Length: 400
Image (cartoon, rainbow, N blue to C red; front, side, top):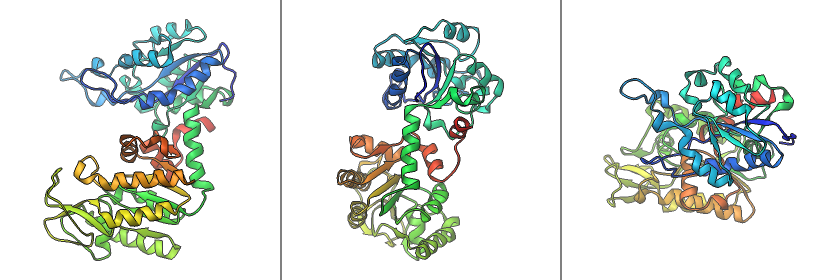
């Protein structure tokens, strides 16, 4: 972002898709705060800012009469809080394109900020409609994409709009730059040993990621529900733990390929098991490959925590995507929390750590450890696809 913004109107795509409570109060403003450096850079450079964002998926959640629930999904709910954070009165436009949007944008003076209405109120947004994108583009002199969390979507405001700006007038925001730089640091020139921690429920959700990691990392630690498909593939008994029967052969292939490539895959030696999927104290610890019928593994056990932590502490670069268990339930959160602490300790000892993916990010934030890892990605799906090696439409559009 070395552009001269003096007297220019910057059309900035941000990701203000923040959670709201029943009173429409923001419960987590992380995404808004992460966009502030880009906004301030433009304002300090003598420019004005026109912000556009989506909030949820309003066209998928219409009211009973088939109309858009404007009250529930309007970005007007964010104006007061954004004004407080920026220490200036943010203007709000009740539409994203149209006569009012054009007039308010044209009247914007240097140092002022205008927030447009939810882009997803328009069906053209998610369709990537070029006519809609052209109208958005007409509002600004330069286009800044700072919404990494939506970079994997070829929507009008995240991708298509960029084609209406020259290479010199379209750019990444500061947050996008950091996201790309940190991901590329891991993917292109990591210090070794490089360890990937992969969790979550399904192997099918992480196939591409695991295949990519096999050609990149030294160690893979597998936790969460997906671990039991691998344990069963090795001949283990996993009771009623989550298993994707149609992915057992794939799990065998991945384990075989890892051996051939010299990549060490670590599966949890023990698990915290329970008869019911509920937050109950009725649990016990058992070897992960000897779980009886009627019992399911919902977290990694103490031995697994110890082994995983040792590998993490011996690593120079760490990627973490996905929790180790059902961490939303207090009885099955210890594994995820212990891994988060190990990643923080390794970082303190000099390792580079990248945390990406909604649940692992949530765990780090819940524990107050976000500032104790090297980088926490704002884009769950986008970071996952970036790590898988896919070219993200929002990034490609800026590069041209």
